[in-house]
Image 1 (cartoon, rainbow, N blue to C red):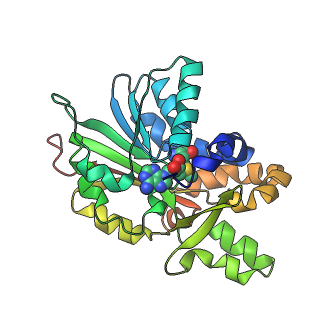
Image 2: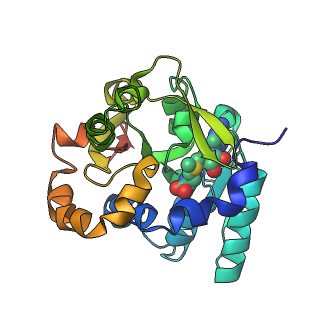
Image 3: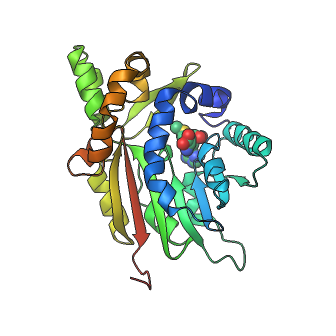
Length: 268
Ligand SMILES: C[S@@+](CC[C@H](N)C(=O)[O-])C[C@H]1O[C@@H](n2cnc3c(N)ncnc32)[C@H](O)[C@@H]1O
């Protein structure tokens, strides 16, 4: 059965990755990811999409296994890696099947498991996820996840100012939202509150970072607005970068980035 992102895989980079808004959002994630990446480290990437981050980590020397449910996305990603001369292992994997993924014999476990930009929002329930991640990590390994936030300041203010109150609070709807991803395709999206994600991870992990990705940079829904007023948004960059990791601003972004480490780290 085709995955929801299969039909839009060919245009995902043009619609998001290669736009000023997409570049800005990714740059904000890299502020936190970059210090973790070391040559030779083992990274398992979940919902890798068109492989932009897999390639970015591989060019910094990481040994990346990149996975996604969508064969269309994986095709674009492996073509991209091939053109760049990068070695990345691609594998089809549903997040729901993570608990049954086996490490090859002799594999010491991953140093980092990474999920960027909302793959986790495609699942209604994340309670299985921390245990599934923990069993694939080496002792002291970490996880970084970036998922859409139920309370996005820019979306609330932006839509409320235009009198579109239903849109302003759409992320709070129970049962999720049908998010449009282009070409008439929609994907059911659940907005998990940060406290719930923290509680789920808290048994196995301790948190290092919680940061807003897109505190003053708006969501994709508002990209035309962002692209028309880029000078204004650039003027807000320093404030955004100063506040994105500070409570309560770190709970108000378009996305939330959470970085945590396995609790039974022998190095403490
Ligand atoms: C918004 S894209 C993000 C892609 C990429 N991580 C990025 O940063 O551009 C969401 C990705 O999640 C993948 N995805 C959605 N549901 C999934 C699932 N159940 N299992 C694995 N991947 C899934 C989609 O195929 C898509 O590639």
